[in-house]
Image 1: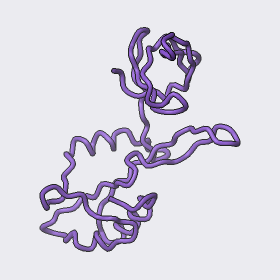
Image 2: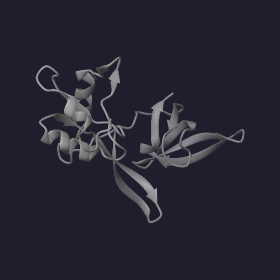
Image 3: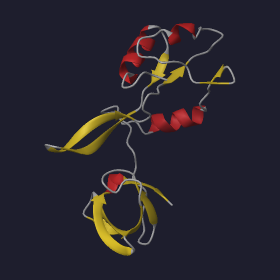
Length: 160
């Protein structure tokens, strides 16, 4: 676990100490005062993955590493992430730019979805149709009536 917004600093310092690290990042389009901008964010804010064999390399220096808050532990033992999960994350990293590519869910009309970004974040809606290549039309129940809204496709989360 890292200090807030210190994932990159922690990764650099840990790699200098000989640890193998994975810091998955994504690019997100967000609305700013100047319009839509692309922002680089951590896929898992405040967390990086550390590969280490405790028999060969002590984890004690990790606690005092710049940018690190501590090691996630369960019952006194460092938390272990299954290799299949790490492999799945690594398989989605684009070789050209090093960012994780998140795939939008396949949608069919009538599918229930959750909106994860923007002014409707956290609300459930019904997928209606695609509008161009990167926007979708949804039916959103507001004040007892279904309203059609158009949002960025990447703003959608899982189907529910």
